[in-house]
Length: 113
Image (cartoon, rainbow, N blue to C red; front, top):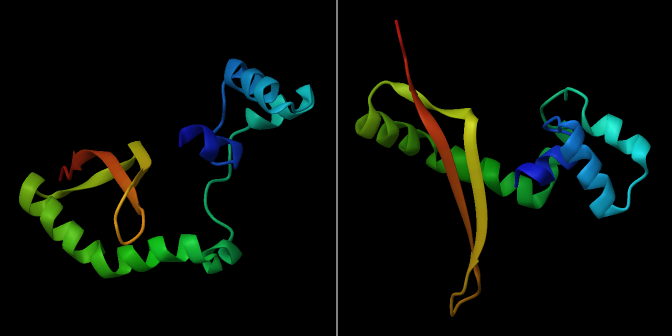
């Protein structure tokens, strides 16, 4: 997941990572320099209309408040980090159609007043 996000411009690569990515993908060496630049993170507003991306927005709009309450109940007053963070995606067979399983794994950061 991280590599795909980096190739889409959301993370900078080390020189070694950029060189390997260019080698594996058959990209010109000049691309390696671009892959190492500090990104301007975020999303183009036009991407929010993409059906797949919109479903994530929709799911968090519906379940976000409940997730927040359950995080606070389990961990206390704080947030889930999106920096110290991992995400995984997998397929789970289901008789009604395969399921997409997305795991968000972020470090808990307690608020310090």
